[in-house]
Image 1 (cartoon, rainbow, N blue to C red):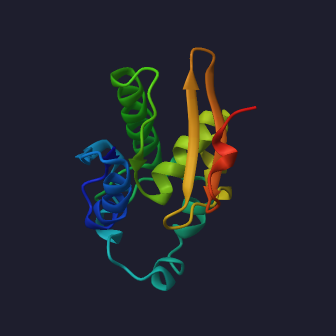
Image 2: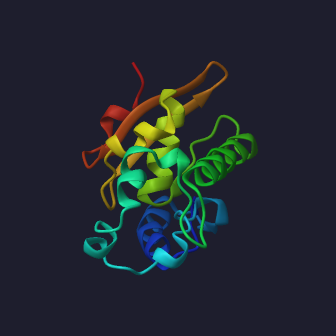
Length: 154
């Protein structure tokens, strides 16, 4: 059971960890993208910036002012997931993160270019499940709020 260091992910992880009887380990690699000087700004204001179109249509070519690029964020989340999978071979891992890193992980698992990751929807407290095996990843669920029975691969 792993969670980003941010309070909102720690709060999301707490009842899951309690139900599973596991401690939550804080994992910095699960952090949200570093939005730099855009952090805390209202979305309505950010959408008026000329850079907003780039964020939506060409994220692989964008770096947040004083922050992280989407390319760096994608590499970070993919490396973090890879490290967790190596540490827990054959086990199920719960990793509580944020919408953009989760979308980037899904895009990577699907073999999709980062410029298409904005087409993926990740809602708060939804479940996305990816099985990582020797032949590569299999996306089992994205943005699920069901009872999770679909997580068993056919």
